[in-house]
Image (cartoon, one colour):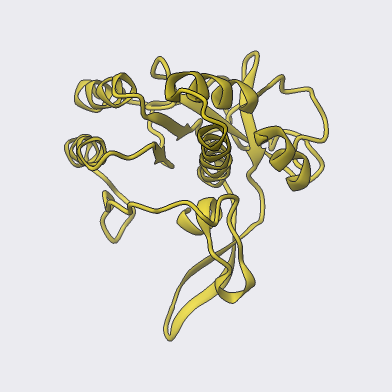
Length: 207
């Protein structure tokens, strides 16, 4: 997910915002499981370390009050929180993407169609490529090229786009809260709008 959002060209793989600084905070164990307590603590740590965007490429059907409170605190500090909407073939996002103020991200294929096995958006939503996106993963002797799928990937793409957009807005002297509102709104699209998958178009949207 870090490579998708901000990869710097290793093995020829680039992210959407290669100039962005990354703050990797581990929450999952070797089996990919993460407890709500650990996730909440990680969000709080990101706030303490002055993150601009928090990417939560994870989803569950069960809402946790501690994680919700940590997210609300982060948003209150002016941090953009992006989360994957879920891959359970249901309508609407799962938690934490369902929390107020969170940018919930849905996945599409390379022709702009919603992927059937991913959650289906209701109304305007943030949507991005979520099928066979080029990324990197640890291998026996270093990083190896890998194709990744899921709304987690789509969320990482939107996080990269928002990072790029915030950078451009900051360079133009736009106040942070206005920049956040602008960049978040530019990520929102109606599900039926075609062509949102084109990466060049996505980058133009962020500007």
